[in-house]
Image 1 (cartoon, one colour):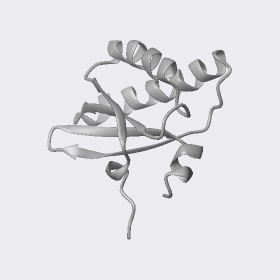
Image 2: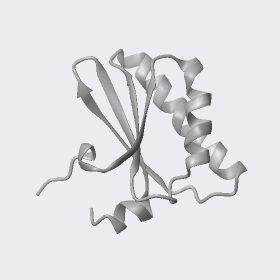
Image 3: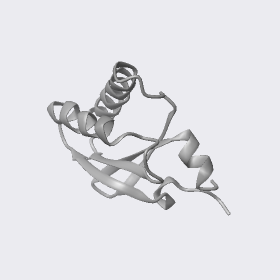
Length: 103
């Protein structure tokens, strides 16, 4: 059976449509933690390719910085895919949790 990131259990979904929303969403993600639960976090982004790339880049940079700052392990895996016709989705999960779930 092939794996698709949409099959992962989702703890919380964040909707980010502009760059200014990234910091608040990432702060909440860092507070939730990535290895404290047996599920992933999902970010829904606009389907506009250049803006989605920029948002994804900002999310990953801020997550890495936030995890380092709070001395949490930086082992986050992510996938980006077309969620529906108008949005991309980014799935973020700890690699340990991913393997514990049996994927």
